[in-house]
Amino acid sequence: MMNEWKEVSILDVAPITSKLVDPKDEKYSSMILIAPDHIQSESGQIIAKATAREQNAISGKYLVKKGDVIYSKIRPYLKKVCIAPEDCLCSADMYPFSCTEQINSKYLQTLLLSKQFTDYANSCSARTGIPKINRDDIALFFCKIPPIPEQEKIAETLSIWDSAIQKTEKLISEKEKMFNGISQKIFRKASIKHKISEFLTIRNEKCIPDDSTPLYSLTIENGVTPKSDRYDREALVKDSEEKEYKVVYPGDIVFNPANLRWGAIARSNETKKVTVSPIYEVLQLDSSKINSDYLTFLLTSKDKIRYYATKTEGTLVERMAVKVDVFLNFQIEIEEDNENQKTVSEVLTTLIREISLLKKQLEQYKLQKQGLMQKLLTGEWRVR
Image (cartoon, rainbow, N blue to C red; front, side, top):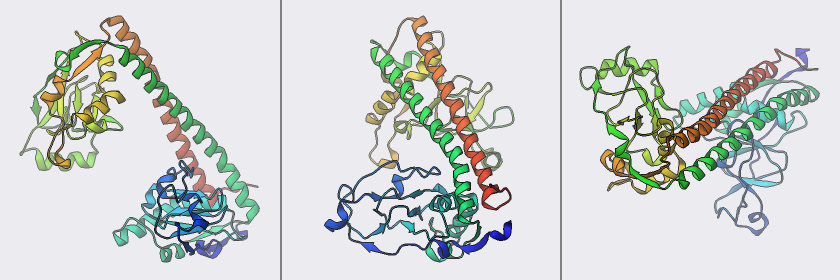
């Protein structure tokens, strides 16, 4: 029955610990110190452990008991919440909640990770202009909680999705390691040197974006990707009479000179012409001279990204870049045999496809979990 659920402020059932201690004190210096960077977003997993001494901590830290729930109050949209695995310390950028007999620690973690609480925390930080939530705001967050047995069942149900998410993340990590290992082994084995300019030439075609040549961007995560509809309209209205954008044909290589050192380079896999900002460099690939997949994998490999970082030039950090003529003059070592290039490309393409499918599956699991949390935490769906 819903009348078994009680409406409470989070701080009524899980007060925030307020005891700060000196991490330099021998009593505490050997304890694990948890900071926001040590927690994985959304999952609540602790991804790094180090003592206060190892982190050279000097300012006051919260003393946390095993089982307390630790919440990162800065940038609440990142959703970083963990359960203390042992008595430890936590950063002053976090809140340690001490659970009373009225709330289960896993249930509280789930509640703090929920869309309901995250939306509230984000709205509080938006009001102040600072990306964090304070104690007073948390005290004003009211929610309904079920009896402990139902809290435990809800947490147990959601743990099934947590397990699926963790297994999928592990598979993605393993596939990515395999991809990087294979590509490093293959490309380091190649010994014939060529300049990039032998395979790529500058494309200087420009036009005003329209429906037939839409505006795209380049991101490190997603490569050559569409701008949002809102951005398209604003950009086209503002810039259509002021400047033209660079045209990118299917298969062209695009890179950002300022961010090449971070991996801002990709091939356009679109089936139509698109346009990108003039800040990018667009290069036409001659597929008669080299397998296009092979060259793309080579130019975007981790070894090459590290190499680009060493060749970035500029007097000011914000103006450091790799000029296109310098880029084209770089030497690369390739496998000369076209059939071998094709074989290498097929192996790496298969792995990329598998990673992509796993990432889509992971996103589905996360969406399913969020939907389930919404139903269970509001009592719309009940577990018995």
